[in-house]
Length: 160
Ligand code: SME
Image (tube, rainbow, N blue to C red):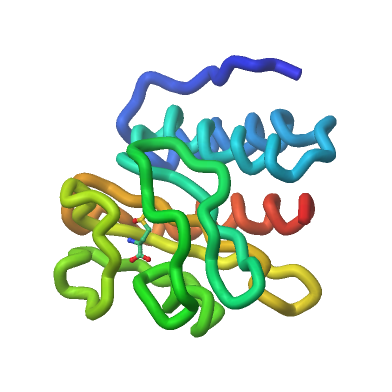
């Protein structure tokens, strides 16, 4: 397994994702441990796209619990009815938030996070985990990000 990422020198996210996603596939291809794979997916997205915070929250009993992540320390437990992550879990869909201050109930783990996208991954029809990506810029997530991160979630679903 190649343990370094090779990325084009561009700020064009479509090109960055195009290069990164196959490399993520390779990174996880020969590893069966879920924690190891989630850790490398978070690291690859953080390194490749330069987001402020990238990480997973896993469904455990009646809460979302912090899993592998890259970025500043974050809240460890999120109730299903709280925050953007909770909304993603209960609504079972991708939630894109252009301005976190406008999202009722947003949980501010850091005052530097300005916009956010959260995506669910399913196992046997239930949400198994969510991927949370935070940016320190307002309105930083477009359809390009959403489609690419959806692809990352499909890849993640193959691991769980
Ligand atoms: N902002 C999230 C909480 C997780 S942190 O951003 C890492 C939310 O509102 O669910």
